[in-house]
Image (cartoon, rainbow, N blue to C red; front, side, top):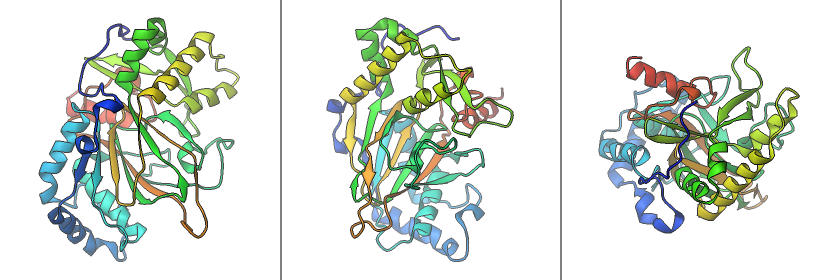
Length: 337
């Protein structure tokens, strides 16, 4: 275990909602960039699946500066951004998948999001709930508590919004930690100790159906987070997982409370893309309802998990996590370890 962090961190990613305005985290795509994106994907769309295009093969030359800036925002900046300007009204969901795949493969390396190795997920309601062992929160219309996804960053494209609800919230996990440290420093230490997380059927062959890892890990100057309150609570169903201690429950409750205090709320519109660093930023979603007659086919998001070319060194505790082990291995290869 790394030495617990006992001092607050000061960095651009330690922001609060009041520090930001829309202009500080929104990148508006230019007509040239939109035209090139259309031109690049058009020859591929008819009769081909986006998975038939190896990464990187859909070069976006006019996006080079934008994507370089985005990498710096994600790693070393405030940790997230919104790309705005895609007009999806005339595009099918298959075309939208090609668009996301093209942008994502120019930004980083798409990573598997499940045990089956799928690189792109459709985030929509399947009509099921978390009572199934292999159902994950993104496959329901339930509210999703503050959490992070896998790999260095997630990229989420809104293809179709919900009829009602489904707003998103983003919060700096570093700011949340700083406030916990200020109010109850002993609970900041608890959060740097291991918790059990339900793996939701996504574990490696032979591995237990849960993983054990700290919520916060401080490594080489970076504070990293891995948080899924629902999955921590669901792990309690396994008889071999110890019952959460009163201190652990108190720490989780305080973390959720401070996330609510500090988070910014946004509603994604069709064509919006949110990109966020998974080690710095947590996100949440309100429950949603798809209203027949307004959104007949329902809320539909498309998601990639990406390893970034400028990604930070990762703590050894991440090597065997289902969320981060692909990025961890890429980092080892990059750094010659």
